[in-house]
Image (cartoon, rainbow, N blue to C red; front, side, top):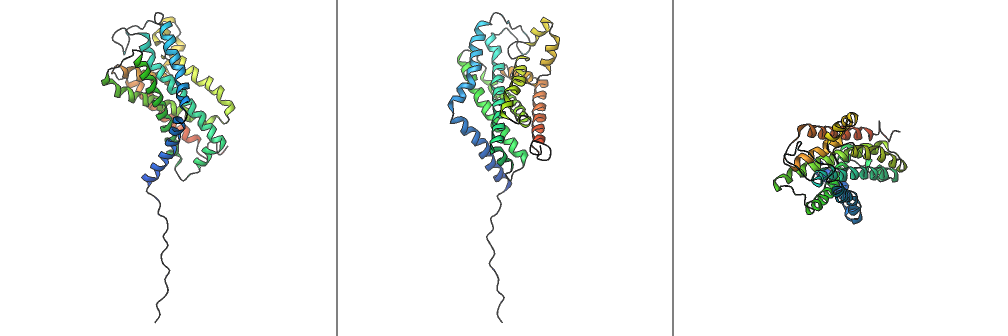
Length: 280
């Protein structure tokens, strides 16, 4: 009796494990941003011109104007250039976060981001990788600026460097998440300049980046003091300022981590195709 014919099994492609799939997506998204940055060395120079100009000119011109009293976290008098460094590190992260937001708007308008959003990958992972890429770029630029400030005489004990690096990463994550959230609501490149004016400059100047908050209290500007206390950028700067002297501020860490989570969730909500810009 003849045996029934059987068809050989087909060698169907096996889906890669989730960890391998995420690793490939991480390398694609983060690697793309890093490669773009490394292929454009002028981006690093343009990112450092502004804080270096403030550091060199303002530290010399206002050294005797802004006397920094002995206030936490400082236990002794410090030079004004040492006081400025955490604020200028925050400036680097703030402008890079807005640059990442502009890149998101450009990629979405030109079609690259739209293609990425249709990839077989959970949208939360994609936005998390974009957030990680923006954070890495900010930390890289901040590290270069800090090395230059160190060469100009702003020294930090080596034992405090790991804590400072962690504080820099947390501040960079906060501002990258803010830029990610703004990219949801900025739909055209032409509107981005106005958004920068309404976000970057108020956040930077209404903060202790260039002068201590007790100066505002001393001058009677109570409303500016309250705005500065509610400014997330203030706490990002304070986290780095306390870390430079080896101290810890629980309130600022809580604000930085909490606002980072809120901004990322808002961005994730905005990029949801059922609610965000895709539906509109």
